[in-house]
Image: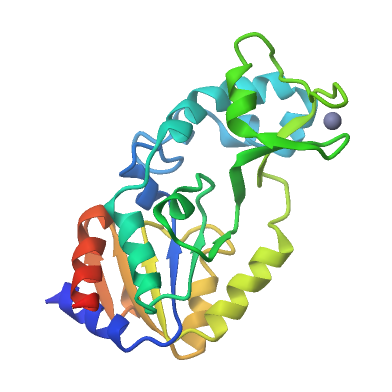
Length: 247
Ligand SMILES: [Zn+2]
């Protein structure tokens, strides 16, 4: 059985890493961007989520982001997040590298989380650099659009996520590659692996000799390179794997 094979690989892992994408959080009710029913079938991402548009018109960015953030801020980790934290606790994973910005891995108890696209839990003022929780900004959008920095009054308050046209955070990208180059097992979950650098980090792991496990609802370009491929829901598959690995 594939679940058993995945658990067997993880049991032997000394430096396992997980790479996660939107599919993991979709099961917590967080709307995905790509794919069927994704937000980007409704909005043009380059219009609503690019740094250029943000700088030109922060209010239009916040109006589009507001609706999604309501779901994101209310979301709780699902069984898939919890299973990944458990695998770290068991010593079978050393880190989770994620494309998600929702903070649910940390909520589930994962200790080492590398956020390639930043974090949606905080907002930073582009003028004075002060930060505040996203939830606080969200709470005043009803009366303030766009939201203003409480410290300096600037209207350029930006969530600490990577927008289109912005560079990935260099330290996190480097850390992800360092982890991949030392890994022996790479567990790719809920990511269609089409976005750089998330698509390239598993390749670095493979070059280093790691075995790959792919868990995704749909086929991915990496399936043929993987030792184990499971097409299913991560919230169902991961708990089974974690239970077998820890048994
Ligand atoms: Zn400010």
